Image (tube, rainbow, N blue to C red):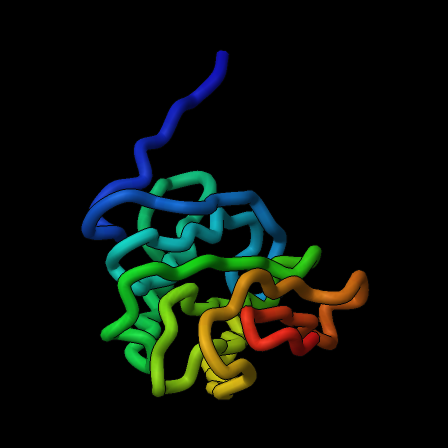
Length: 130
Protein backbone atom coordinates (compact mmCIF):
# COMPACT_ATOMS: atom_id res chain seq x y z
CA UNK A 1 0.00 0.00 0.00
CA UNK A 2 0.78 3.65 -0.19
CA UNK A 3 1.52 5.73 2.88
CA UNK A 4 0.41 9.35 2.94
CA UNK A 5 2.02 11.99 5.15
CA UNK A 6 0.73 15.42 6.02
CA UNK A 7 3.54 17.96 6.22
CA UNK A 8 2.18 20.32 8.88
CA UNK A 9 3.48 22.76 11.49
CA UNK A 10 6.18 24.21 9.25
CA UNK A 11 4.56 27.13 7.45
CA UNK A 12 2.22 29.85 8.59
CA UNK A 13 0.01 30.33 5.56
CA UNK A 14 0.13 29.25 1.92
CA UNK A 15 3.03 27.25 0.47
CA UNK A 16 4.25 28.44 -2.91
CA UNK A 17 6.55 25.58 -3.87
CA UNK A 18 7.45 22.05 -2.74
CA UNK A 19 9.50 19.25 -4.30
CA UNK A 20 11.35 16.06 -3.31
CA UNK A 21 15.17 15.98 -3.23
CA UNK A 22 17.97 13.79 -1.89
CA UNK A 23 20.33 15.92 0.20
CA UNK A 24 23.53 14.66 1.90
CA UNK A 25 22.59 15.54 5.49
CA UNK A 26 18.86 14.95 5.16
CA UNK A 27 18.49 12.01 2.77
CA UNK A 28 15.17 11.95 0.89
CA UNK A 29 13.31 15.09 1.87
CA UNK A 30 10.75 17.64 0.78
CA UNK A 31 11.86 21.26 0.45
CA UNK A 32 8.97 23.75 0.68
CA UNK A 33 8.84 27.53 0.42
CA UNK A 34 6.20 29.68 2.11
CA UNK A 35 4.35 32.32 0.16
CA UNK A 36 3.78 34.76 3.04
CA UNK A 37 5.81 33.48 6.02
CA UNK A 38 9.29 34.00 4.52
CA UNK A 39 10.44 30.46 5.39
CA UNK A 40 12.00 27.45 3.73
CA UNK A 41 11.27 24.12 5.42
CA UNK A 42 13.10 20.82 4.89
CA UNK A 43 10.83 17.87 5.74
CA UNK A 44 11.71 14.23 6.33
CA UNK A 45 10.02 12.44 3.42
CA UNK A 46 9.20 9.29 5.42
CA UNK A 47 7.92 10.79 8.69
CA UNK A 48 6.62 14.19 7.59
CA UNK A 49 8.57 15.85 10.43
CA UNK A 50 10.34 19.17 9.79
CA UNK A 51 14.14 18.75 9.79
CA UNK A 52 15.12 22.38 9.21
CA UNK A 53 13.33 25.71 9.16
CA UNK A 54 15.18 28.58 7.49
CA UNK A 55 13.75 32.07 7.96
CA UNK A 56 14.47 34.66 5.29
CA UNK A 57 14.68 37.60 7.69
CA UNK A 58 16.55 39.65 5.09
CA UNK A 59 13.24 40.03 3.22
CA UNK A 60 10.89 40.16 6.21
CA UNK A 61 9.31 43.45 5.07
CA UNK A 62 8.63 42.21 1.56
CA UNK A 63 5.05 41.43 0.65
CA UNK A 64 5.64 39.32 -2.45
CA UNK A 65 8.31 36.62 -2.58
CA UNK A 66 9.17 34.14 -5.30
CA UNK A 67 11.51 31.13 -5.18
CA UNK A 68 13.62 28.92 -7.42
CA UNK A 69 15.39 25.79 -6.21
CA UNK A 70 18.52 24.40 -7.85
CA UNK A 71 18.09 21.05 -9.62
CA UNK A 72 19.84 19.16 -6.82
CA UNK A 73 17.84 20.96 -4.11
CA UNK A 74 20.97 22.28 -2.39
CA UNK A 75 20.25 26.00 -2.94
CA UNK A 76 17.23 28.25 -3.02
CA UNK A 77 17.09 31.73 -4.51
CA UNK A 78 14.42 33.98 -2.99
CA UNK A 79 13.53 37.31 -4.52
CA UNK A 80 11.18 40.14 -3.78
CA UNK A 81 8.80 41.38 -6.46
CA UNK A 82 8.12 44.56 -4.48
CA UNK A 83 10.04 47.69 -5.34
CA UNK A 84 12.07 47.96 -2.14
CA UNK A 85 15.23 49.70 -0.86
CA UNK A 86 16.55 46.61 0.96
CA UNK A 87 18.21 43.48 -0.46
CA UNK A 88 15.88 42.13 -3.10
CA UNK A 89 17.49 38.75 -3.73
CA UNK A 90 18.78 36.13 -1.25
CA UNK A 91 20.58 32.88 -2.10
CA UNK A 92 20.25 30.20 0.59
CA UNK A 93 22.46 27.13 0.97
CA UNK A 94 20.11 24.49 2.40
CA UNK A 95 22.83 22.37 4.04
CA UNK A 96 24.74 25.13 5.87
CA UNK A 97 21.79 27.57 6.04
CA UNK A 98 24.20 30.32 4.96
CA UNK A 99 22.66 33.19 3.01
CA UNK A 100 23.98 35.75 0.56
CA UNK A 101 21.86 38.90 0.24
CA UNK A 102 22.18 41.31 -2.67
CA UNK A 103 20.49 44.39 -4.00
CA UNK A 104 20.69 43.52 -7.67
CA UNK A 105 18.01 45.65 -9.35
CA UNK A 106 16.62 49.14 -9.03
CA UNK A 107 12.94 48.44 -8.67
CA UNK A 108 11.36 45.02 -8.60
CA UNK A 109 12.94 41.73 -9.61
CA UNK A 110 10.83 40.05 -12.32
CA UNK A 111 12.46 36.61 -12.34
CA UNK A 112 15.46 34.72 -10.98
CA UNK A 113 16.67 31.22 -11.75
CA UNK A 114 19.63 28.94 -11.21
CA UNK A 115 21.81 27.85 -14.09
CA UNK A 116 21.68 24.14 -14.93
CA UNK A 117 24.68 23.41 -12.68
CA UNK A 118 23.14 25.39 -9.81
CA UNK A 119 26.27 27.48 -9.29
CA UNK A 120 24.99 30.81 -10.63
CA UNK A 121 21.79 32.81 -10.47
CA UNK A 122 20.43 34.86 -13.34
CA UNK A 123 17.90 37.59 -12.58
CA UNK A 124 16.06 40.29 -14.48
CA UNK A 125 14.19 43.34 -13.29
CA UNK A 126 12.16 46.39 -14.18
CA UNK A 127 15.40 48.36 -14.48
CA UNK A 128 16.21 46.64 -17.80
CA UNK A 129 19.18 44.76 -16.31
CA UNK A 130 19.95 41.04 -16.46
